[in-house]
Length: 374
Image (tube, rainbow, N blue to C red):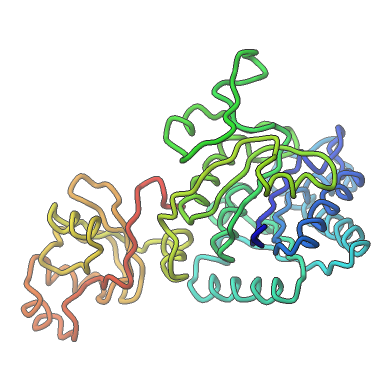
C-alpha cells in the first residue's frame, strides 16, 4: 500500500469516559492504532481534543464548565494531563511526541503559516508524532478555529496531507438523525460535500465536545478543497486506523475535488489569511479571473472597499457581491481607487508603478464563497 501522510483527529467524546474525565484505556487504544499506522510507514499528525475534559474535575467543577474563563482554566490544567497521557502511551511504542498549541492568529500571518508548516515537516521527517490542539487557555472569539474539526482540516493543508480521519462517537453521516429516525440511512461514500448536506447536519453531538456533525462536514469540505480524502466515523481496537485508511472503516468516506491544491502561498491565502478589504470587478474581469486565471487589471475594477497596503490580501467580488477569489495586491487601496477603469499604461502613469496588474495571476486564487474559511 502506498505510504500516506495522515491527519488523525480525535474528539473529546472519543477520549473521555461517561463522567467526562480523560479515559486511560481510550488513550491507550488510540495510541496503539496510531502506532500501527506509523509502523506501516505512514506519517501521522494527531489533532486531539480533550484538554478541557481532562482538566475540569481537577479544579473542582462537577461537569464541563460553560463559562469562557472556566473552560480556559480547565484547559490550562488539562492540556498537561492530556500530553502526559499520550507521551506515556506512545513511549511504549518507541514514538517521540511533540506538542503544538495553536490559535487562529498563529496562522493568519503568512510567515507564521509557513514556519509552522516547516516545523511540522521537520518533526515528520524525524519520525516524531506532532500532537496539535487549539490553545484553549488563551483563545478568544475572533481568533479561534471554532473547534478541532476545522483545525484538523487546516493542518491537512499545512503538511500537504493525503488523508484525514475524523474519529467521533457516531458511525458516519446519515440522511437523518438515527436517534430519532430508525429508517435513517448512512452514507458510506460521498463524492463531494454539498450545501444540502451541511444544512441537514445538526449541532453539537456531545456534552464533552464543541464540534457536532455539521462542523465535521464543514471540515471535510475544506479538506476536500485541498485534495484531501476524508473519513468521518468510529472504530475499535489497535487496527482501526489501518482499516480506515484501507477503506474498511465504520463510517463515511468523502472524496476530494483538489480545487485548492497548489503553492503554499495560495493555500495560506485561501485558508488562513484575513482579507484587508475587497475589490469589485465587472462581469468580463470576473469571467477571466474565474475561468482563465488571468491577472486583474485596473480596467476591470469597479469599486474598492476598505483601506489596505501593497502586499495585503483582499477579496475579489463580482458585481452581485459574490466572492470569486482572493489575491495579494500590488498597490495600496488609495492608488487603486485612482486607477479604476484605466488601461494598463494609463494606470502605471498615474500610479508611478512598474506593473499594470493590480493582482498578478501568481498571487491569485479562485474560490467559491463556501470555500473561504473566516
